[in-house]
Length: 293
Image 1 (tube, rainbow, N blue to C red):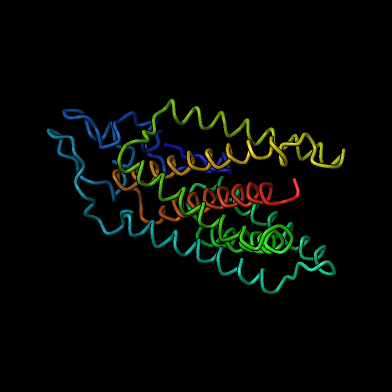
Image 2 (cartoon, rainbow, N blue to C red):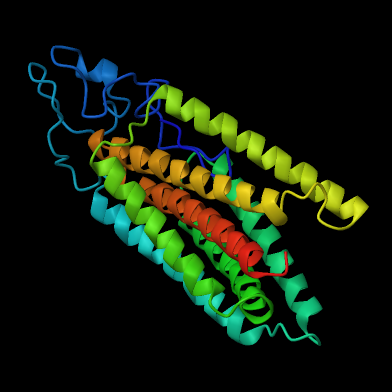
């Protein structure tokens, strides 16, 4: 399948035979149906890392090739990527002061870092293969942005906002993971289409609000403050939870169907973007609830 994320054009795992693992292959999540041709169902069947199929039972065996992606690969790459975000965020917090005399320059650096992170993310989104250097560069610059924003919120809004946002992000991740593993959340074509439509509408509304704020001053249409801000903050967190479910499905399909190991970097990239999205929405929501608005 093609997973979704704040960068909607991000590619999913590698494609073979014109399909993605999951949706385009049109197979159940656990593997191809019994009695079907596994090479017609498995989009990774032609690569050397694809698991061998039992044609009669239809259940994929564990990948025997050492070059196939495993859950350990995904966990380790995600830890490296998130660790990079954490380190650069901490350095930005410590080295870029947000006192009134330096707030403007620190904000300028943060916005510049966010733009560089966005460019890195877009380049990776349109590349056919994962680039660890690009993904780690995205993580590093995104961390600088998060560090300055988090420091400003902690200084001017609430000292407890950042740990609350971190705890909220971790809780959403754990909750969605449990719900996904228990199959309380089922990622289907309809689920994917609904999330994509809702996410595009959400981003378009936020973009329009930002334009009104830029040219008209204030908070634009009011989507980022007050009652509307709280409502859209909750919607943003729910969308982030849906992105996580799509990312978990992408990882599951990649492992089941023998994605190459290097594509675990794509999983790390997607999960990191989703967690950053959720954290920022929590931070904004807490700022509204505890601020003057």
